[in-house]
Length: 247
Image 1: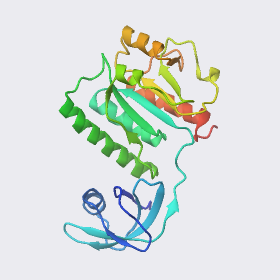
Image 2 (image 1 turned 135 degrees about the horizontal axis):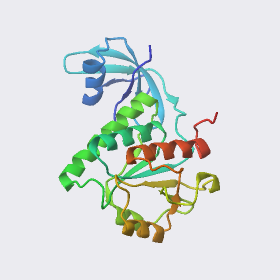
Image 3 (image 1 turned 45 degrees about the vertical axis):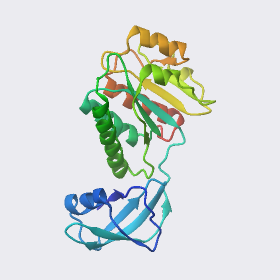
């Protein structure tokens, strides 16, 4: 049986200490998984390490765990991949965030585009917290011990105007582009990958992207849905420059 992985939030997990599980970790461990005392756990707090532990006290509203050891987690990709995703429908965006985490993306930057989903500021704030929870759950499932950075949504033009770090490469997935993955040289910095919404980017947005120096990238002759495009492109980039093994 697979030992459950539980995110505790950014708290100290020193081996030899006993901690009270935070509310979210308590609910998942006791109320969802229904683990009994003495059950083994792997705790993580986002620092890149795994902390094998044992559930000690289980009460109605709280539980504790004894931290036994600390091991570095080697699941992070050497490719610093930033997924810049135009906000799409709720179920599509959830899938995008979940699969991006599983595929090793370091940063997820939601952007607001002309044809993308329109949300008022208060709903965007709630959505951001929801997407962060989706990312945490994906880390628990896939074995990562660092939570990818899920940034505050920006308007597309604001993101395009933000300066890229030296060595970073900015790509725009575009089925009409002439450049394919085989033409790209290995990056020296991060790779920022921009994915459009349902219906694609408006012509003026494509012009802004080209003016900002983004390189159009095509993955083939078919037009992919927004929830498919980011997943496929991320997997191919990880296979080419990251840690997905080629067969």
